[in-house]
Amino acid sequence: MGPIRVILLPGSVLPAQPAYGALIEALGPDVQAIAKDLELYAGDEPPPGWSLDNEIDGVLREAGARGWETFHLVGYSGGGAAALAFTTKHPGRLLSLTLLEPAWAGNWDWSPAHAELWKAYDPLDSLPPEQFMAAFARLGVKPDVVLPPPAPGSPPPWMAKRPAGIRAFLRNFKSYDLDRGRLAAFGEPVLYVLGGLSNPDEYGEIADRLAAVFPDFRLEVFEGRHHFDPPHRIEPERLAGMLRGHWERAESAQEAAG
Image (cartoon, rainbow, N blue to C red; front, side, top):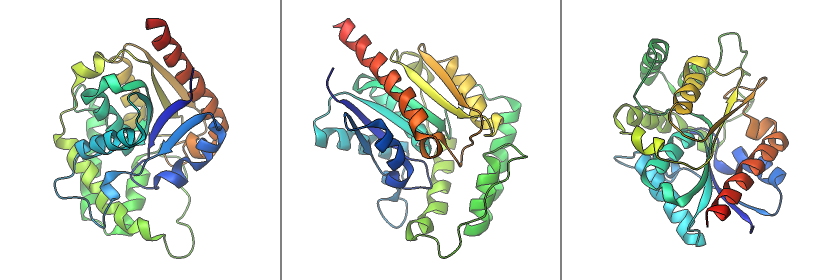
């Protein structure tokens, strides 16, 4: 078995390197892990007509530049939604899929509670940036979770792009056609990592829905974590061990199949 090749897509807030730096270090030198920034933030504003398809194209370019025909894909939050979209369009390129609380997973089979939660995102669109980010974070966790205040001092320059980027994700989720049938046809291993303190009507429900779709699906719960202190940043060593096992099983199955 050669080096493990993986592309990691971040969420809609942190850039890829600060999001995944600790995890990449924990994975070790025999894992060729590429933390890839979202195409959404390539410029000062979201590209005109941006959709999850732009992120699919970006992953294809990244893999092509490295000569990777197949690879493992990891996506967190908005990057998780992009990873699901990639799976529907290019399943043959993936050795496995890992979803770290994807922000969205199609517009089918929603429970009433999930539908009500998504209605709560609509009023955020009219809020100024600082209020927008706080309200956005509040919806992602259980009601009794205490979220930390913003870091003191001026925010990093990239933060100015985030409200517009998150709005672009939310708009695209309403219209994007995530093909359930193509997800159901994906036979490679899928690992879903869930924080026990994340909003169950969002990320827990998505886990339940995807468990009924993917043939080879495994759920791992980090009880003390939530969407804004995720395992890849707070418990990278533990997550790295899970990922290595997930990837090695996927690659062993590929080798056995010929």
